[in-house]
Length: 243
Image (tube, rainbow, N blue to C red; front, side, top):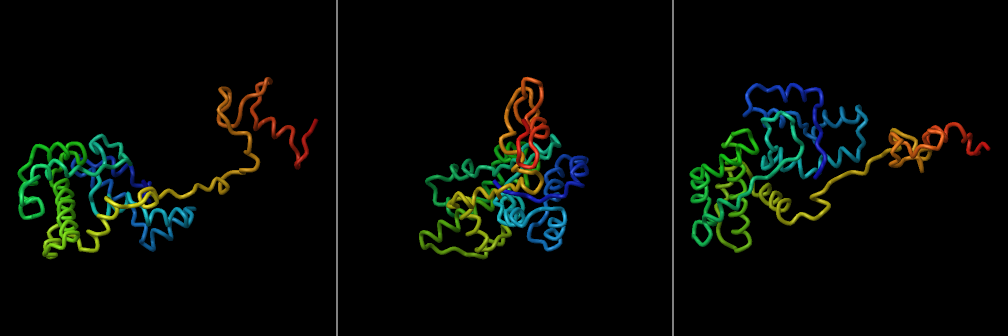
């Protein structure tokens, strides 16, 4: 869970993309690179604090969705531009190889990903409006990561030239593995503190917020039908209560 910076002015344009299979990429195009100096400068002008910009730069969501291309939105064809994204499961493919020598060999696993059309298409219908190729690429990256890290932990030889097949480097594979497998709480949930003081008087609002049935977010209603905020404004002057 984390922060994503996006271009709010282009939301309607992205949701109006004619071809359903292009909706996933259209939504990705809305997200802004939090490391881009121009994006950082504009974010500051728009009132986004440094804490939120830093959280966006460390966001696990941005890494999974944009850098590694492993996470996808649920049913983009509904055109709601959902912000809860999912990583497709690799287990159906890997379970096919359990007990076989090819489990650690991408040269055997990749053809299987191509051949297992039913689960691949099912995932594509859920996550990419039917674009199976995008889901295949994500599964291939995870399969390569699994093979590479298994070789690293067992001391087996691994030809790192294979990593180019999925567009990743050894460093990226290790970072991806850390995020998916062994990341700590603070790495998985990068949520900055909200600063209410920047847009409201928190001292004045203290004790006035509540869940009264007759209140619209400003405290319970008085017997006279007045809210806590109205009573405050009528009776409290410069720190002195009026009798």
